[in-house]
Image (cartoon, rainbow, N blue to C red; front, side, top):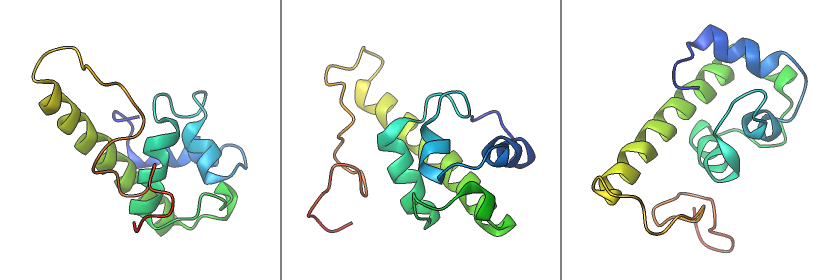
Length: 108
Protein backbone atom coordinates (compact mmCIF):
# COMPACT_ATOMS: atom_id res chain seq x y z
CA UNK A 1 0.00 0.00 0.00
CA UNK A 2 2.70 2.48 0.90
CA UNK A 3 4.38 1.95 -2.46
CA UNK A 4 1.18 2.82 -4.36
CA UNK A 5 0.70 6.11 -6.11
CA UNK A 6 -2.69 7.83 -6.23
CA UNK A 7 -3.64 6.32 -9.60
CA UNK A 8 -2.89 2.75 -8.46
CA UNK A 9 -4.70 3.31 -5.17
CA UNK A 10 -7.75 4.69 -6.97
CA UNK A 11 -7.84 1.82 -9.44
CA UNK A 12 -7.67 -0.83 -6.71
CA UNK A 13 -10.21 1.01 -4.55
CA UNK A 14 -12.80 1.33 -7.28
CA UNK A 15 -12.20 -1.92 -9.20
CA UNK A 16 -15.24 -3.42 -7.47
CA UNK A 17 -18.09 -1.72 -5.65
CA UNK A 18 -17.70 -2.26 -1.89
CA UNK A 19 -18.10 -0.16 1.19
CA UNK A 20 -14.96 1.88 1.80
CA UNK A 21 -14.41 0.01 5.07
CA UNK A 22 -14.53 -3.36 3.33
CA UNK A 23 -12.19 -2.21 0.58
CA UNK A 24 -9.61 -0.99 3.11
CA UNK A 25 -9.74 -4.18 5.17
CA UNK A 26 -9.83 -6.69 2.30
CA UNK A 27 -6.29 -8.10 1.97
CA UNK A 28 -6.92 -8.89 -1.70
CA UNK A 29 -7.36 -5.16 -2.31
CA UNK A 30 -5.02 -3.58 0.27
CA UNK A 31 -2.83 -5.87 2.30
CA UNK A 32 -2.05 -5.10 5.92
CA UNK A 33 -4.43 -2.29 6.84
CA UNK A 34 -6.90 -4.16 9.05
CA UNK A 35 -9.81 -2.98 11.15
CA UNK A 36 -8.09 -0.66 13.63
CA UNK A 37 -6.10 1.34 11.10
CA UNK A 38 -9.03 1.50 8.67
CA UNK A 39 -11.03 3.25 11.42
CA UNK A 40 -8.22 5.76 11.90
CA UNK A 41 -7.85 6.29 8.15
CA UNK A 42 -11.56 6.86 7.60
CA UNK A 43 -11.71 9.32 10.48
CA UNK A 44 -8.72 11.27 9.11
CA UNK A 45 -10.26 11.27 5.62
CA UNK A 46 -13.65 12.36 7.02
CA UNK A 47 -15.44 9.55 5.18
CA UNK A 48 -18.19 7.22 6.30
CA UNK A 49 -17.19 3.55 6.38
CA UNK A 50 -20.51 2.78 4.68
CA UNK A 51 -19.85 4.88 1.57
CA UNK A 52 -19.65 2.79 -1.58
CA UNK A 53 -16.38 3.01 -3.44
CA UNK A 54 -18.23 3.66 -6.71
CA UNK A 55 -19.76 6.83 -5.23
CA UNK A 56 -16.46 8.49 -4.23
CA UNK A 57 -15.49 11.67 -6.04
CA UNK A 58 -11.87 12.30 -7.09
CA UNK A 59 -11.32 14.68 -4.16
CA UNK A 60 -12.57 12.05 -1.70
CA UNK A 61 -10.31 9.38 -3.20
CA UNK A 62 -7.39 11.83 -2.84
CA UNK A 63 -8.34 12.50 0.81
CA UNK A 64 -8.56 8.77 1.47
CA UNK A 65 -5.20 8.15 -0.20
CA UNK A 66 -3.53 10.95 1.78
CA UNK A 67 -5.13 9.75 5.03
CA UNK A 68 -4.03 6.17 4.34
CA UNK A 69 -0.44 7.17 3.67
CA UNK A 70 -0.30 9.58 6.60
CA UNK A 71 -1.96 7.27 9.11
CA UNK A 72 0.13 4.22 8.25
CA UNK A 73 3.42 6.12 8.17
CA UNK A 74 2.65 7.86 11.48
CA UNK A 75 1.75 4.60 13.23
CA UNK A 76 4.75 2.74 11.80
CA UNK A 77 7.05 5.45 13.16
CA UNK A 78 5.27 5.52 16.52
CA UNK A 79 5.32 1.74 16.97
CA UNK A 80 8.98 1.51 15.96
CA UNK A 81 9.83 4.25 18.43
CA UNK A 82 7.85 2.52 21.19
CA UNK A 83 9.59 -0.81 20.52
CA UNK A 84 13.05 0.82 20.54
CA UNK A 85 14.45 -1.83 18.21
CA UNK A 86 13.12 -4.73 20.26
CA UNK A 87 10.23 -7.06 19.56
CA UNK A 88 7.05 -5.33 20.78
CA UNK A 89 5.83 -6.66 24.12
CA UNK A 90 2.20 -5.59 23.91
CA UNK A 91 0.69 -6.44 20.53
CA UNK A 92 -2.87 -5.18 20.37
CA UNK A 93 -5.25 -3.42 18.00
CA UNK A 94 -6.25 -1.04 20.79
CA UNK A 95 -3.60 1.60 21.20
CA UNK A 96 -3.38 4.71 23.29
CA UNK A 97 -3.49 7.69 20.98
CA UNK A 98 -5.88 6.25 18.42
CA UNK A 99 -8.47 8.81 17.42
CA UNK A 100 -11.46 6.47 17.07
CA UNK A 101 -10.64 2.75 17.24
CA UNK A 102 -11.44 1.31 20.66
CA UNK A 103 -12.97 4.56 21.87
CA UNK A 104 -16.65 3.55 21.99
CA UNK A 105 -18.50 6.01 24.19
CA UNK A 106 -15.53 8.36 24.39
CA UNK A 107 -15.01 11.54 22.40
CA UNK A 108 -13.04 11.23 19.16
